[in-house]
Length: 191
Image 1 (spheres, rainbow, N blue to C red):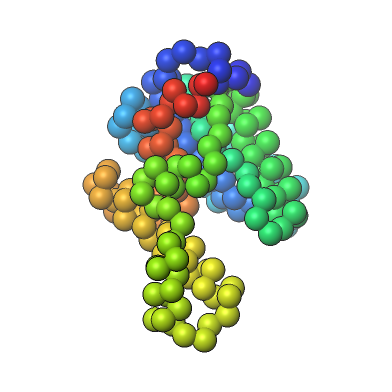
Image 2 (image 1 turned 90 degrees about the vertical axis):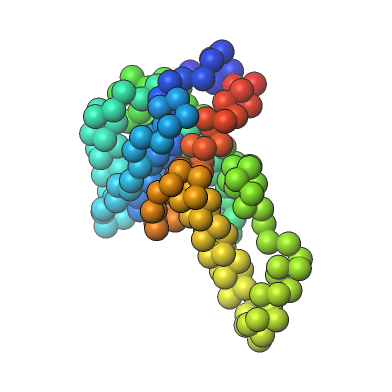
């Protein structure tokens, strides 16, 4: 894959991807227009069979579109080394499939960067306190999960409002958000 630093201008068609160990959510942009979006689910009894399925399905998917570049959400380590490693395997399969389809431009973006760009920052202290006041006595994990759900709803709302869509899947909305950042900030990826 070519380094984005060698590309001077934004590619015409970009596929943004929000990958997990179970699926690939995608959004395809031509210039600044969202032209396709959806989700491809992976199957398999273990991570290696899911990676194989991800590779096959991504290869077939990309053959149908004239995509110049892909942008994926950068893998960040949160709590589980196993999950981070499994996600890295899946992303490797996706990048390999892209390369086999002749897509030589790839980049990644940190989740908080694109989320902040669309106005979906982490919950403020006041918002966290309001959440605790509205739902007293819950565990720390419950509040963390609820805050994550609130932010997913915010992303869906942004995507549906900005692009006049009716997307309910938070992974697909994330893929659109990643692509939205990429089409408006390509120069930051290429530096």
